[in-house]
Length: 394
Image (cartoon, rainbow, N blue to C red):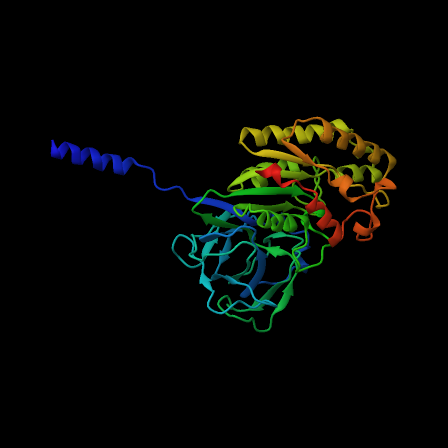
């Protein structure tokens, strides 16, 4: 009998599930193919890249998501390190960690593939800034990038991944290879993905200031006590819903850039102005409101199939921009009316009204306009973030 009980107990212990690990995306840059001609790309052979990111949620451990998804050839990674970021590309002493892949330093990333690091024993606080350093022994001639970084990066000769301060460094414009930082928490954490174009990507926000509207939303969530709810910015400048702008159209990238994000619980969608604007240059590209609404419905259905809630944002006013047209404006009004009244999404945020000129709602208020009648300035991004009802995410 004792042997039977012991055997039963051992079997129960062996079959009991391990304690669940709650990984969630805390920072993100959507992967892109470089638009720079090959002959104009910098030679990154035997150079170190150092890029600074601000995460949204903290955690007990972190892991990095590196990407070779847009390349047709394997990518050789040398040493990779992560540390808390100081000023001007420096790292804070005593915080440096070696990053491993399958318990080894360095890795070869197959063509068209991402690569997750091993978990890194590095407790981090919400809104911490991390410096990620990557040595590329053979360079990366067709590296996966994210064109607009909103933050200064650096490149320096040789393997300086462990250096507190880089020697002979030059500045780096786009994000290169890094596409995500994930955090692990003992309690369940979740992520809001913001899907959009240059307005979500933060073009024209003050660099190195974390003033894009998703950055400011992350700050509001922390102040509001929602400390385990992060924000992953999947904005791509010049992106469109239904046709190729920069990056794959939103319907094409929805699964990879939204539904595959660890911990995703909600997506906020602010897309469509570039689809409307394209028609001002080519009438054959004019889309009826039903086409844009149909794209939203597709994303709602696909998200709901995965248990992800969809929050639609009204398309911002853009009268005065180079690609504004009366026909595009009529479509914008019709689409926004549907967003406000249809009830098909799980909620909506009326960013258009928050940022519009009360005297001319087709135009962005001057106080929020960076000067091109299309992109908000820092104050505009603040108004957008403040207009979002946090109860949508509770």
